[in-house]
Structures are given as C-alpha cells and as structure tokens.
Amino acid sequence: AQSVSQHNHHVILSEAASLELGCNYSYGGTVNLFWYVQYPGQHLQLLLKYFSGDPLVKGIKGFEAEFIKSKFSFNLRKPSVQWSDTAEYFCAVNHGSGNTGKLIFGQGTTLQVKP
Amino acid sequence: DGGITQSPKYLFRKEGQNVTLSCEQNLNHDAMYWYRQDPGQGLRLIYYSQIVNDFQKGDIAEGYSVSREKKESFPLTVTSAQKNPTAFYLCASSMEGVSYNEQFFGPGTRLTVL
Image (tube, chains in turn yellow, purple):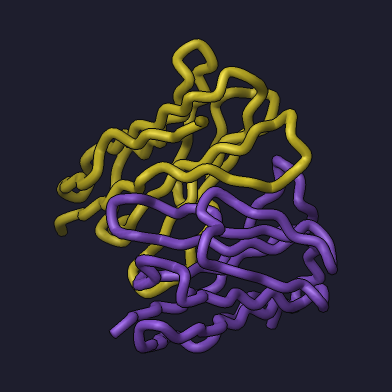
C-alpha cells in the first residue's frame, strides 16, 4: 500500500533557526505533492504544492519544498522560522495518474518555535 | 463569505448510538471528502464524493456511511459498528476531484464516545 512518512514527529526550534521537515512517499509513479499546515485553533490550509515543472516550489509565509524524484522525497524548508510558525505540518501525496482527489497524508510534524 | 462549515464542533455520543456529522460548503465545489484525524496518525480518508449522488470508500470506511444528495452537503454518519469512533473528523472539498487540486478544509468536529 502507498504510504507517506514524516520522520520528525516533534521539532522544537528557536526563532531565526532554519527548518527542514522530511517527507518521503512510497509510490513509484507520477505524484502530486502537498504540504498543509494547521495553526492552533485554525483550519488545515495549503502551504504549497507540486504537480509539474520546477521541482523547487515556493509557498506562503516564506516556505519552500523540493521534490527529489530519485529519493521519493518532498522536504519542507524555511531559512528562518518565527514564533508564528508554531503549528502542525502535514505532507500529503496524490497519485498523479489517477483521476481522483484522494490524498494520503503523513503522520504530521508538530513544530514548536520558542521566542 | 465562502467556506466549509461543520457542525457541531463537539459531539458526545453513548456507545451503541449512531450519530451524523454535518458538512456544508458554499464554494461550488464538485468533490467532497471526509477524513479522520488521530494523534500521531495524520489524516485518513473515510469517504469521498466526486459528484452528486456518487461516493466511494476511502481507506477506513468500515463503520461509517455517507450520502451526497446535494452538491453543497456531504453528511457523515458514524454507526454503532465503528469500533473506535472517538476522534477529530475533518470535511474537505475541492473544485474537482482530480489529483492536483487543493483541498479546502472545515473546522472539524470532535466526537467523543462515552
């Protein structure tokens, strides 16, 4: 069965530190990749997505992610985190060759940024 | 103000009872989804619907049922057959049920079985 793995379950950083959250998926075909974020008390929302073209994608609030097909990875990065980035982050994958919106989510990573 | 609404926010149920969670969207989206969120497990797909009067099982459909009689509504019933129903339930929608579309999420319903 296809799966998505997020290796870091709980990350604690100080403000201005750099962030990289890992995401690996198991499907070998065409994929569409997403990062969603859930801020405390808010709806889950899209940070960024990749479906074709430049494998380095930029999202909202200074986040970016790089799709590395050979490594089945889609890691999320931010050069300098802020206290307001404290949230839960989810990586999700959709089979690009399929014709449905079915997403498979990773387990999530809780990011805590200390002021 | 467009979006997805879910009600109620908190729901308590006795064992053996069925309960229905509401999900409504005014985004004119064709596709709708139900997920279950448990700590440390991320989101898991229960059911999804790409058009009115059609829906498919997701990865954990056992003990759940849905209907899609109207484009804007996709209620989820948690039946007494669901062995571990206490969880946070999220509804989502997307413009079309295709692979590259962003899904928009509602605020969720937290169900507790007493």
